[in-house]
Image (cartoon, rainbow, N blue to C red; front, side, top):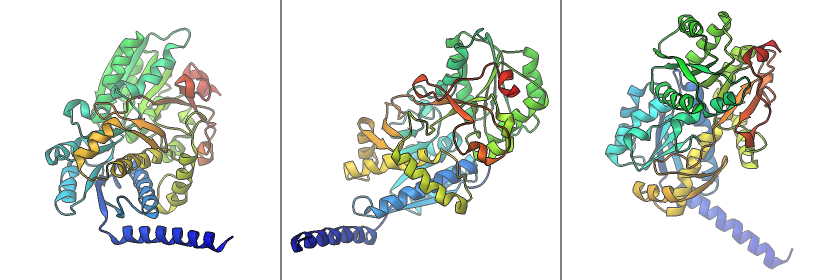
Length: 416
């Protein structure tokens, strides 16, 4: 190597070091949020936080944003929507954060929306369903691949798979938690049932505090529907699955929108009881969707997961990381922290993320739908090893992403 080349290399290294040092010396750009780190939503909340902290480290290692380091400021909302407004008031009034994002789940996002609107703050929503249909807030953006019609998107794959079966099923039951997510997604399921030509023979909610699901399952079984869609939160997901098995109920196909089955803790708790269930997924590393960037992120996440007490085998962290990737890219492109400037840019830009390119529609939802439907198959035990690869969770919709075929009817899936 020539002396000139050596000097050029040293100069470039020195400049990079100075840029990074200057960024670290500057006042940080503070991004504030509440997150469910305890309570019933904590499993996904903890995953999301770890992924966001990885993004924070990645950005700061690269020199920060706008020449300033990034600092995440967050508080535990205890999975309680009533805690959310005061958290965001504190973030804005006491902590003086520059930007806000939401915590995980529809209930928490809906609780944060009024203060975001009142303060004219841009809000990134992590895994919220149809939140902006009621608010129509132009500075809201959703990080979930439900596309322009979010309510039907959760169960669309389930219905498309059911439509293709022979003999074609005719009737369906809908059971849902009487809360934000359950109500919204079941509304979409009704639309899908109508579009598919299925007759709804049962359509009832249950209180979120329900612990005994046997009466619900007996009432559904009495109507003898071909199909069953359940729109549930993690604890009731487990309760419904156990009740269905204990009572020996066997519809031809069931599942739909059961939150919690993306968690290894629940997967290992339920084990073979999962076989045959067809349920939503937001992203999985199948051949059509995997990327080197997503793989690298998941490697980093898994390295931290044990120490953080989070699910090392989950895929949800990619969504939380992409959430901040979008926000960071908007800040970089606009060279601004002004919420209205960022929102205007985000409405017209396409963002490159670990889960592919994302473009937002007018309501802040993704311009295109990318939800998946997957079926649990051939699970033999309650070991985490059953879920270390995708051999027991087969993507069955959409066709361009499929990794295998659905086992139908359900009775055949549990007979294996």
